[in-house]
Picture 1 (tube, each protein chain N blue to C red):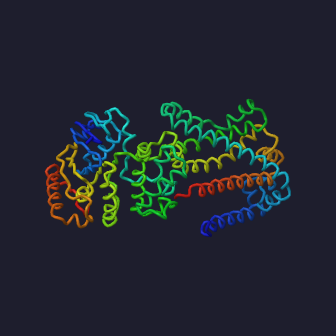
Picture 2 (cartoon, rainbow over the protein chains, first blue to last red):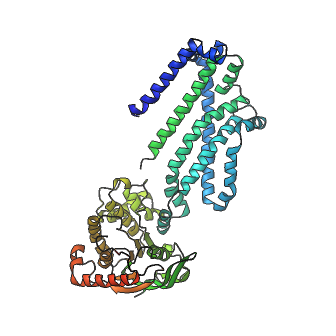
Picture 3 (cartoon, each protein chain N blue to C red):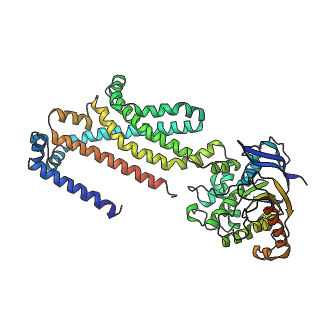
Length: 252
Length: 261
């Protein structure tokens, strides 16, 4: 990345944190909001909580990270699999596409408690929630990518004796990769939200679980520290997917 | 001599739009037939019909003495207007696509494809990606790919149309001896009269939509000279004038390109 890409967001972040620090430390923020100063931590207090409770935070962050990775992996396999299946079978695509779209209209926060009833308090319901929200962008984008191949390219392959499977592997799948990566980038970003929802309805560890505890105990500084770690996780995963994209699409 | 391609009364309609009507022609073994006509006259549609990618609404097409219902895809190699190279494969892998599709392993396919690849002046660019090649080289890779499919009939859809004038001249010069070798039959669609005369044994002139056969003319001294020299010869310019007036009779006002188009 170039300096011109890094400097502007960095300057903005520093300015924001500085303004927050001043507003919180002077009590201005709490007074304006009509809150107890205890409930409005400053960035330095959040940083202190981040450092002091690093062991607890790291332990729970790892739990959440693992859930996100596993849920994303499940969505990747099912999403790409479904896209290929629907692409190869036109009647099936027409019949099930509305259902795929419907899967995205289910409010995850509503379905999460049901999943806990079904799958218990283990990793199952979290995986299901994460996979459910990651599935849609991956499946829809991959399907679009598979269908993006120009007709003359497929006709050319057919006159060169290509069987259906060869056209899929040599032409359609590579052509869909950029689309798949776009979907995957959206998916990893929302996967973190899914993990928190999943933990809120039934968990004994994870950053979402810790946030619930801290919320009840008015540990607002550590609550913000968890939020900070969640966005770090999302950013790192997003960056990793973007890097993989650059490495695997070398022909552009 | 057996006809490699035989078209009898071929018509194609898309909905209410009549694109081709009553097309009759034969293509002999080893012969190159140039097809020329105003834009939108159904030249590409005709190639699709011969290739078996599409079915005629009326009439029949047979390839290689087969029946009309035969799978023509197996007998024709089709080179679309765009080079249609796969950007994720190297130049040599693109050229070897048909060999891979026919079941060879990657290494064997590359080895078999290499002599043709080299003969087309592409040696040294085996592992270059299509995006790294010039327009002329991409067309040559596309031609190598079509040639290596090993089919007896080549269907070339304006193979040089996307190139600038100079590059096109040199492409014509290397294409001519390959096509003149008599190993393969070819149908060459073009909008360039000079190219049609220089590369073809005969030239079929189509009318504007719906495309009908206006006439089929012999092309004098194809491929024997340099394309620039050829276009200056007397027989050549007589044929060109004859074809041009044939075209004009069908489509007044429609600009048909000569060498500068």
